[in-house]
Image 1 (tube, helix red, strand yellow):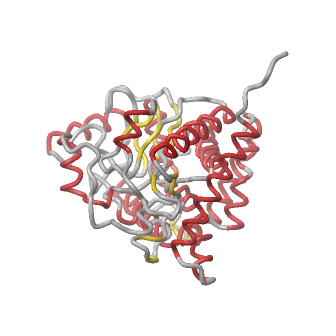
Image 2: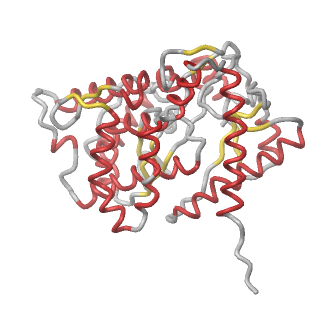
Length: 374
């Protein structure tokens, strides 16, 4: 996420933050900073794990001056023409700056779901790769760049340099190992982390030891309740797959093609771009039969399918905020509506800063206080 002033100007402070605060790590550009929650299995604990570091960061930022956390996934109000190196002596950061420039200076959230069986993990990656645009549609929050409306709901994903340019649907763990080794040899990936696609298998010793699916497509979901809702939808869809072994695009797709893998990749890429443009209103091609369906309607279909399973497993209540997003729009749509009503972009971002800080404060006071035992 970005740090900056209450006026919405993004300011690079990560070098100071990572020195003083445990749990925060720097990105190549100093204007954003990252933190990671522990791998909890309980949504209530995850909510507090999301909120507490933000409060710690907010308190620290006050010691540096009048600084705060800035919502959004792009440099909404400006300065995308310059890269601010957080570690000038890091050669990988130099490579990132020289190769991609500020196209990578974005804010986002990566959601990880633990899956111990590598073959099931790769199956989940295939399914979620085809449906990742739906999760981007729910999370889009970057309609502005350099003080202008860009024409995209997710400017971040439209410009983010997906790397390598072509990533297959991995048919097995061995396929993923072989492909990764080939990319490293060819130099299309500089290291095992240099796989920047909408979803990827992850683990402590990639590509050999894998233990989780990492969804990377989402814009920054600044609302913790919305973030848990999108996470719950992802978990429920994967849980559904684990109970239905044939829920696999390579098995269930009825597309007429001589090369299903290539056709599915093309559909996924096209759907990602359509959602980057129009998010929930985007017209997409369904991986099962090729029919046209809006992102909103497709999400609704999956929601109805997975809700009973989530209810059985005890977390269906966390899915309910998705209905609000579908009804009221994602952050990008809400901000664009305000802009169409005459509000200028700085005032939209400034109000979002105020609203976010108040929501986090309210949630933490209600839900994350220690229980006193007499």
